[in-house]
Image (cartoon, rainbow, N blue to C red):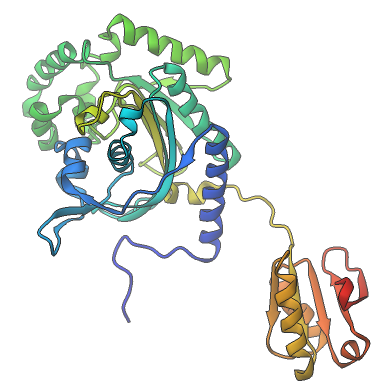
Length: 403
């Protein structure tokens, strides 16, 4: 038997119901905020992610599904969604058009990492990206959208905030942090040693417990912000407070990607084990320019769908649609014709096996439909159909033209 590859799962049955419920819920909420759907390719040039996500990141350094295709192109399966959306934004010359552009997307992403609960090698994300708004109010809008989605799905969370500064306050802070980390070199992990020279702020995101104990005394970027970034962060907190969204400041929150600046946020859950992040994002005002577009302010977020599946509180399933069954072979063709016509307006299931009334009712109940409609020889003679409402248990015989 051929099985699926490790870390690549099928989605069916109850999981499929949760998956599609998440997509439909998140889509409706994103549209309420004025966002429009965008679809980008699964396969992109590797250079796109090296330049955007950053060569110092674990994604680029360890996790990408990268290969040379038949045209000798260096390509990879997309490991995250933002870079592809930014590439499309520039390629379609929207950076030159000006104005505000808001997109949402959902689809498969790929990372070669150790599979674990809620973290797969092929996984799915829902994300949004906003271009052209240089305002912390848009950052707050992103956070409120995530909050709306999670609350609608019945998922509890804690919101963590930080500011990653800008080109004015980040460089001097970086030097302070490098100095601190180099004094700890003999006691930190190899990843942190490597990051000191590539992207030192990422050491704060290290998952090694002994490293984290050392970094408690590290200088905090939040205490080294310029006046503009500090004012924006205070404004963000005020907006959230005014809208009843609780938060906690996490000075070690840096996100896992190199392109973030200023606002960074994560939604975390205590119900999914040690890997507690269920959504996250922030501002990335320099990324469009990094990828050869015109300087454009931008902010967005992404949510891992598989990580949320078990946390979703599904609404009560309502009975809907029709089950149509035939009592004998002569009635089957008529039942098929009626089902085809009825599907213009309703969900209709049909059983091609002739059965007695009791077995048809049992099959209809199993399909969770609202109505069971049966045709036998007597109904064919009279031009009628017998219908039972499986919710209130009422029965009636209708003329076919009235069904």
